[in-house]
Length: 239
Length: 242
Figure 1 (tube, each protein chain N blue to C red):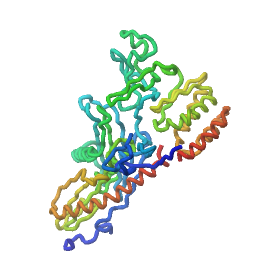
Figure 2 (cartoon, chains in turn cyan, orange):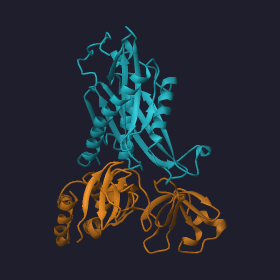
Figure 3 (spheres, helix red, strand yellow):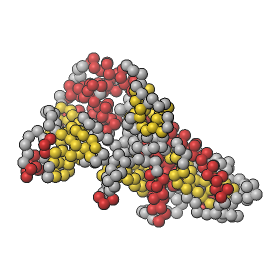
Figure 4 (cartoon, chains in turn cyan, brown):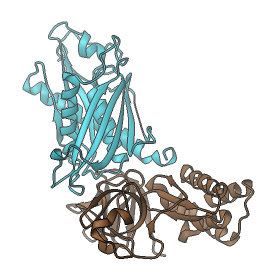
């Protein structure tokens, strides 16, 4: 893969090196659970409320509680102001986050209820959906919601012909030379190491995709450690 | 005392391995491993493994005392909102006196607050009763809302903390396990003092030697405190908690 033109990363990281990450739970005292997750300049805050009775009533499921995720970027999170409120992109991300988290969350003990997860991005520098999922998983755990396991998320991608982990804004959207950039968000479960979400738009060969997923797997192990530390050291600060 | 092992676990973490262990609340079995399915403090007691939540919403259990508000009146009972996932149901048969089914609102009307006991917890809802002493409609006083996870500290070991507040302020203090505390006293000043003490405890649940600090707070307020023995006995327990 050395023949590509992207031989050195824009911010000087190694190709399989993630940005510095930070996580903390209990950032919103009024919520049932909350967490903040940062990778480099990207920040995500997740808040969990519930389980509580679901309205409108026709959405209720008599067999299980449901998970409802809402993702949004704050107007000042990017360089140009973005229009607040739901848009096509945020609706999509809310939905895929919901699917990824539903695979580990077990709400069968709370029929007819909803657990609301609100993800907000106060500062964006690519990889907001994966940061959002990491924060949401932490917030769900912090809220004491039954989960079979945790999830960790990471963005991997291909810049020209080079596979990289945790793309930043330049790599994700500014780089257009050579073969351009492809971005693949991957969500992994912590115990069974299964893929809970994999999105891919762009071009990549089968072998490269396999290699990229291997890289994501490795990176998710590191993220899980950060999430674990955040939860284990939480007792002292929150509530 | 049997040896108890305590550790903070995250969902998906193996608490202990071995077929002899029995997964309880907040844990499940996967092969030989007993795995946590929520975040909390893992408690292994005589091969019985459970995870005690340390944050999050209130989950009712049988025998809990809860304080809630009437939100609906049905043909055979009342629905009570207590801040949980579902509303609690109080049947007419579970109130201490005969109520005419046509005049149910005269006994308990919308928006009125009651202290009830959890009788049964099903996944579909909670049945409650108020047929015992100390339960019933709340009249006067004030309600302080704290987190459901702070409640054990407000009650203290064998009710020592509540007793301390009661003795110092002369107020009647009822703690609902859902995080609502009802304070009722002869005058508002005393009620406000009791409220301040409860809020102090709720903000400092993880403080070591909390009982002593609450004692100091009571003294600062110019109230008298008795039962020094209980305070001394209780500090040991708090060290263990840390």
